[in-house]
Image (cartoon, rainbow, N blue to C red; front, side, top):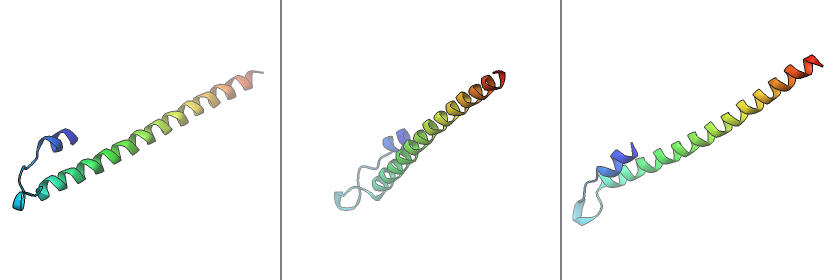
Length: 66
C-alpha cells in the first residue's frame, strides 16, 4: 500500500499547488503507517503474553511432579 501510494503522485494541482490527490495519498500513507505500527506493537505484546503463558505452563507442569 505505502509503496504504491508513494509512487502514484499527481505532480500538479490547481495553480501549481499540491494536488488533492497527493494530500489524500499522503493522508492514507500516514494512516496506514500508524495502523501498521500499532499492529506491530500488539503483535509484540501478544508474543510476550504467549511466552509468559508457556513459562507458567512449564512451571505448573513441574510443580505437579514435586
